[in-house]
Image 1 (spheres, rainbow, N blue to C red):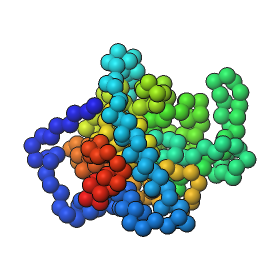
Image 2 (image 1 turned 45 degrees about the horizontal axis):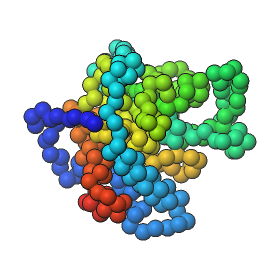
Image 3 (image 1 turned 30 degrees about the vertical axis):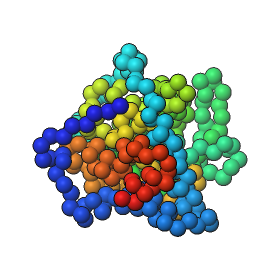
Length: 282
């Protein structure tokens, strides 16, 4: 589905043991910790275990992912001019739902904020939104180092209200992509094919998403994140800030992502147990 080349020693230069350890502190260490010993009373233990099984199934489905239709990619192509202040910066793309926020099924469920959403048919619904801890902080801080985009499988009428709430002065989020920019599998699964962004190199972009389906065509551009629902003790984005700082100067962002998360290796194995033994705990 993807190709990745290296250029001399810049991309492929080996990291020190300390550098590799620091990179692995994000996501992988939590995954290892919660698989070493199961505690059914630990919310995050259950969350990470469930997310691993979800990732395993989604990566398994990638085997049957047909090559994207080139005519469709051409129809969805976008050209997104960079702000002058960020013309030399790499591009950091965030998913929205379950990555930065969670939308409750009802406005009557306790939430951080209730926002009015005007649907495409003109009806207005009130959506209860839970904001993930450090969501605003990661947008603000990472905008110093990256160009920030949002790529969501949600409709723009919903997503824009939430993004305007998170970034009311349009300071941090430079571009927004929505459901109409996704490609769909025969099963109706949305895939965020980064090749539609015509004026960026794949080596200069990463996508943070709780669903591995999203980066099905560019697995090495993907940064997995455990899903968020409502737990205010969640520190996933805080850990992610440090990881993103560490990789920001890499000539090819795919290299540290591939080496850290090893998602490309999931398909070498048949069972979740094999992935745990040969990928997560290696």
